[in-house]
Length: 253
Image (cartoon, rainbow, N blue to C red; front, side):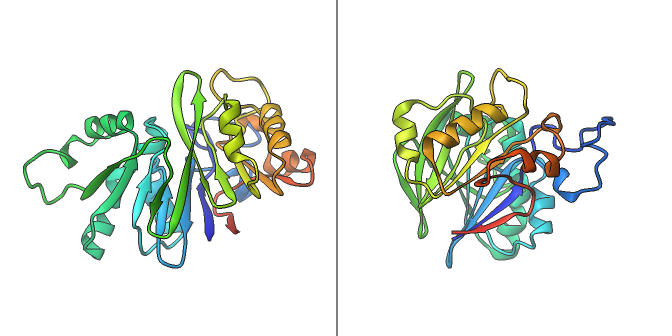
C-alpha cells in the first residue's frame, strides 16, 4: 500500500498570506504546506482522504491519473472545499466518484455543492455517488478502512486505520476505547498544530504523548501551522521514531 501526503498544513496553509515569519519566508520546500489531505493507493484502488482547497494543485503535482473514491473526516471547509475538482475524473475517465461520509458531513456537502445534488441534469456538475459511513469498518475496492472516532473540540471527526497505518487529523481528544483500535499500528499519523496549547487541536507535546501510548514503529505529524517552527529545526528535536510529515512524502507500507 502506498500513502502519499498530499497536504500537511492547517486551514490557512503555509505560508500564510501576509505573514513575514521565518517559516512563511522559508526557502525549504518542506515548509510549504498545502491543506491537509492523504492519498492511498493499492494495486487496484485509489482513494483520497479529504479534498481541501488545494485538491486540484495536489492532483496535478502528484500526476494523479485515476481516482475511485473520496473519504471525508469531517465537514470543515479546509477539508471539503476542493470536491468540485473531481470533475476531470468524471469526464475524462467516464466514472462517477464514490464519496464516503457521515450523515452530518453529507448535509454540509449538499449545502456547499448544492448544484451537484439537484435533480436537474446539469452536465457541468461533479458526478458523485454518496455512501454513508459511521464507526463500522468498510471496504473501498481492496482497501480496508476502520473508522476511529476522535473529537475536534465538540465536533465528532473520523480518523481511519488502514491495515497497520492509522491517520488522524483535526483532533484534541481520543477516548480510551478508540485508542485501543489504534494500538498495533506500525505507522501513526497525528495532527500537531503548534507548540502552544490549542482549544481544538493537539499541540506537539500532546501529540507526542499519544504516540508514546500507542508505541508505533514510526509516527508522523500533520496539520501543521507556521507557529510550530521550521521543519528542519523541529524534526531535529523529535525522538528518533517521530517525524514531521511534508507535502509529497510517500510511505510504502
